Length: 230
Image 1 (cartoon, one colour):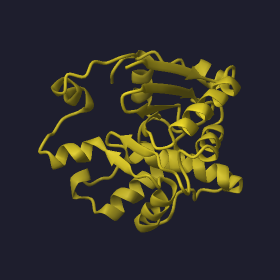
Image 2 (cartoon, one colour):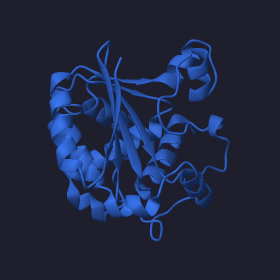
Image 3 (tube, one colour):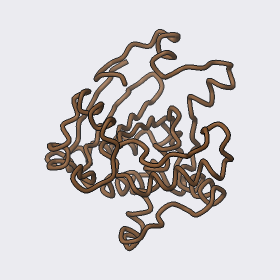
Image 4 (tube, one colour):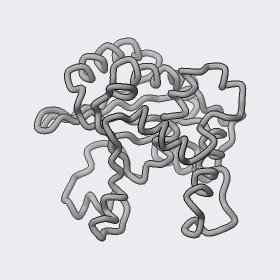
């Protein structure tokens, strides 16, 4: 099956915008895989993560997502037996001199080839991507796309943040972006991701498996196509 990787920044956004539209319209019920790169969690709990209640875990996620800026978003549209097309969107929102980040995580990302200076200069605003996904039916009311993540609570929350900022630009000047409670967040998630979300990590737990994505790929004999795994 053909596989394509398309890197997107401000220099080719309009061209890729048109191609993305044609693909998303043609395969409106496709599976969409999501991954984000961000400067790691800047807030941590004094208690071990496994003893936190769902409400406490959400409060921690909310605090982190509201104060961090995404660096890249990867989106793969997969239609069974036909094509697998991946877009890597470079985003200009993260400014290392201004925004909160974990230095060790930045060093790790750079070791895998991310040039943060170039991404800051040539990247597109995050809300452009949010608008693209909403306008052409991959998220939002009536969407049939099924989204797939791996341990993707932060990935989903970051994308929802972008959607919220696009829908309500005035919130860019305020602290509160994500819903205040876990229940409201889940309701918002169901509204935006109408076609459903599948978290591979959760599916692994159901099957009695425990490991990272690279481990799972080896078990399933799935080869890494492009880029450096991390």
